Length: 188
Image (tube, rainbow, N blue to C red; front, side, top):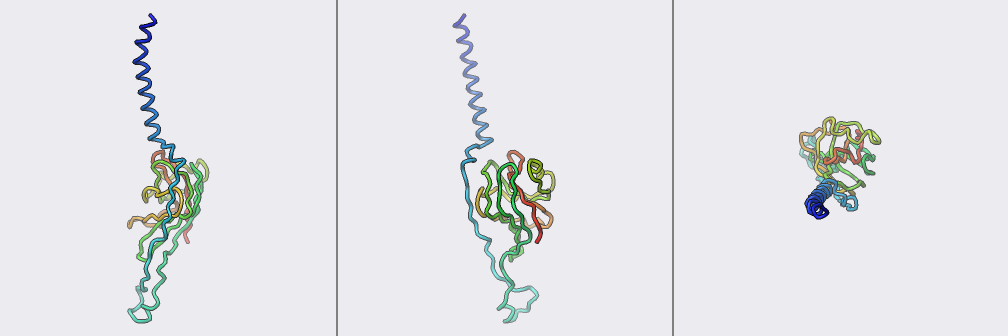
């Protein structure tokens, strides 16, 4: 009788081990826990700009000698607050000399994680757990994957995205539908 139990239990044990290995593999892929110890620092400079003459100025020698300032104009700014993970830094919405818009993250410091994106949204920024998952409830535009969890980064806004229509920015984890951190944008 003891031999029969050993023979029957071997396939059960092999099956259990196979399922266990598969569950661990899927869990590692899904959660990617190693990213908690991996930092990716990005140090992008402000987007390059060139001086352009004022459109109302006549093409005279005086007008070409004094072009409008070519530096980016800050339209809105905000400070990141923590949600699911400790997050800090500054967010700016900039208009470049050519009329395009860029969202800039400065001194970003957050946790690394799976499937992180930068979202420009119309959702209110709420502190604590109440703010973790409000950003996909309204209008938002994804500006792409987060380039790194630390540093200074630029994200180009799509030409059809009106920066005035959005009131906040979120570092959004698409995998778990949660905000790592967010900033309310104050118009300047």
